[in-house]
Length: 386
Image (cartoon, rainbow, N blue to C red; front, side, top):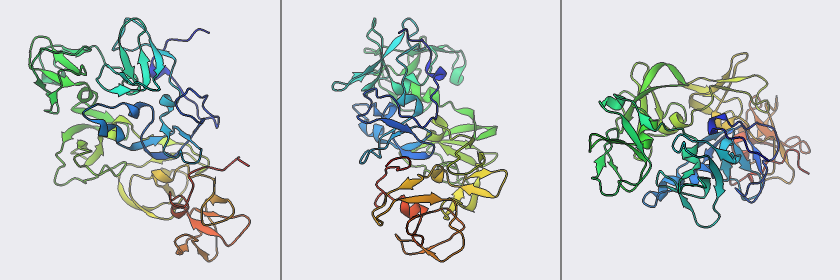
């Protein structure tokens, strides 16, 4: 069967409640999810650098990807495009030949960016390899004149530059490793280079959650008047999350992860709410309708009714098992009038917010947050299973 040669951007993964055909990416079938999961993608985040292996352990929010629903595999998450990688792609970093999907079970391959990987792409003609993270991006071979204030054209380096002098990246001021070909270099100025990752996050640009003004990239420079946390996900700006993207007109700051993987500005999740939900990106105190607890930033709201929800509460599992009860319990948008007491924390449950209850034991109720704790829930969704 002939495989269509298309770019990663042209690939679409639907949200049907069907299992992903097994591609040896994981030992169990994968199912789609519609909630925000905090973790690491087992596809593109499996790449690592010998000197920076800890970077591959960083966790970020993944929305609308695929997960394993087997017991003990709750940490297995994939981006949509990483769960169903194309068998063959064309990529701007290697325009001469198509790249074919490879899965390395034992010995990892090395991407042209210098990171090692187990799932990625390879050219069958040249010794050129690409991990899933780089395959998702389409870097140009050249940056035009006056890019980053430089008077010459910059070229993407795809081979190690052994024998040349070490250079300092003109964006982040950190050394460019001459043995790792993941940077742009000026062919005329020997000391001018920029990391490929720094090019992806330009000094100034617009973001879907803040289209009014461009965001400026600041490195370890949180303004005195600004919040020390990302407005969208709440990540604290520190040594690990040091890249800040800031609008000084609106005092709007977000982290690099939200630049790279922006949350949807609107979404539909009928298991959570009957209407479409819209991101409201600002600092504000609110009570989440799905769990009854307070939030302080960027809820998703319904324009048709007075409904607000934490991003983490979107797509809460419908039917689950917990270790505090013999029967399965189900999520309900509201319990209604009554004296409800959580069977986990023993505190009052407000019947006008979302919670879990047992259909066989009417008085049984659990807070949404308590029911989905990792020490209470087995992390398996039971809806539709015997």
